[in-house]
Amino acid sequence: MKQKNWPARSDGSRCLSLPLSKIKGPKFPTQTSTHQIRFYNTRPSDGHDFSALPYDVLTKIAASFSLQNLRAASLVCKWWSEALKPLREAMLLLHWGKRFKHGQGGVRPNLDKALDSFLKGAARGSALAMVDAGLIYWELGHKDKAVALYHKAAELGDPAGQCNLAISFLQAEPPNLKEAVTWLYQASIAGHVRSQYQLALCLHQGRGVNCNIKDAARWYLKAAEGGYVRAMYNVSLCYSSGEGLVHSHQLARKWMKRAADRGHTKAQFEHGLTLFSEGDMMEAVVYLELATRAGERAAAHVKNVILQQLSATSRDRVMLLADNWRALPSAR
Image (cartoon, rainbow, N blue to C red; front, side, top):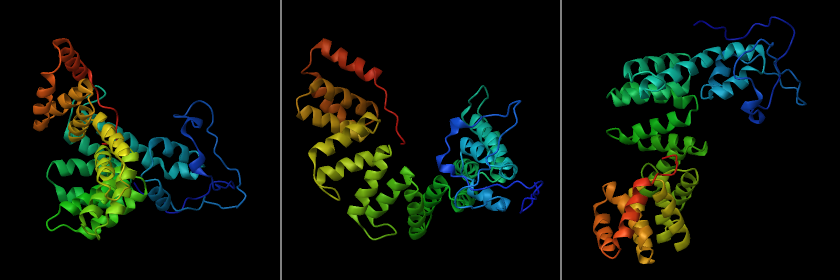
């Protein structure tokens, strides 16, 4: 699709700066109606005018926008609406790609159709579609194509693209550690929890950067607070050992339980052992049973020892609790 670099003005109105960070989705219509769309043209006190932004600059800025943010940005003025039209189309293609990939919304799983939809969305400039297309290419073994898409999304500022690109560098033969850490850091400061965890691992292990346990623990904690389960487990270990964080049995227990409640198998085993040592047999068996079902063999022996000390009624109650257990939501 051929586009102009600079939008031509059809009238004398101006498109002026608007603090988009303060715009909340529900204030904007999700679809056009019979009423005329009202664009925002209030002049700010600083007088900045973004109406002359080139289309390619605007679309790069918006490449990682969600559909809600795209709709909001499209209402700023008619030139932004025109410039962002390909990205709005890309979001529709992204939606269909996910339906084909996961077999949702009444369609059968079809990886070819999913990839086709993602690639069409990527061609319209969506960094989100680039990442999803890259994931399929990676699964199919076409790693060069996947990395190329991750790189393009990363350069557009997409944190998931930056993270996936970094991980591909870490797994390469030979690995490109410095480049990986560079991209992980960019995604981490943007708040991407998986990147924060991976960056912490690199700092902890001295991969591509000098070993720094204190900084590693800081990034583990950020990722854990963002809901990343593996980071929760590592934060617990840091508090337990006093490595990188001040030794605290209470905080170690708190983060171990959080990881266990979100399905981390080793955390379930270790939290079960903690409960056993504290004399809470019933709760201990529930966590040990969950760990056993997830393949933690060491948990089975301890669980069986405790079960022998429980009545038949208590054993049935424990198994019922384990059967009905559901992991709490997390960022994984």
